[in-house]
Length: 300
Image 1: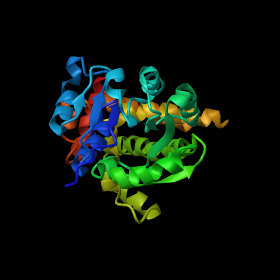
Image 2: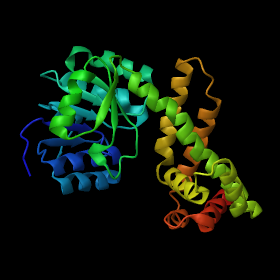
Image 3: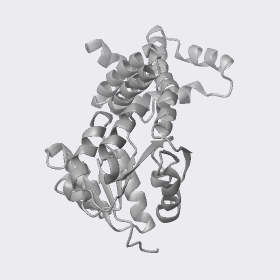
């Protein structure tokens, strides 16, 4: 396998997305990968540190330490922390590195981040448009901003990534990501609400069969299991994203009634999904999963 001496990569935020992309890039031969996460110094960051060590990433002592000398900085933090992540590295940037903002935030937030970084970095608005596993760094991405067209060949040729350019204005990639999430995350929330009620009334199979009349291409039992598992495993992060979706809609003059309700349902399910009694049912799904979720809800 060929070894790359450059580019030197830095990850700010080392959760699921950061780890997946970093591990994929390591497998392609990229050696110079540094990582920083605000959880690294804390006990709850032990899993993040272990993941970095396992793949051979350099675990930095701070955002400044991680970013020092980097050619490409990948910001993969929580939605609420995206601007602060940029602030944490901005004073320490040199050499005009590429700054890939893959965070799920509104177009307005991405424009604000671009303005903050100014001439210190070549800022690129990046949207990840599919689950990060199993493709990892090859998950399709959409790029936008004045540097997107120039950066895309580097990502494809050097990092073996896949994607396309949405346009030359920061926010164009984020807008697609945010607006489509109204539907994607909203359908998840509706699926949960529908089938929890169906289970309580004892008509899960009947409801699934009835939905197939309207959507004959979908197996609603599989849709139910998949959507609810995603919410249980990632609902809190999805809720943070939906808060940014709501902000996007406000920026566009659309009242985010459905987006805000979806955020509440996603966040609730993310909390419920932490319960051991629920987690052990997620693999098999079906009635046992719905019973476990309803049981937790009844206790609260």
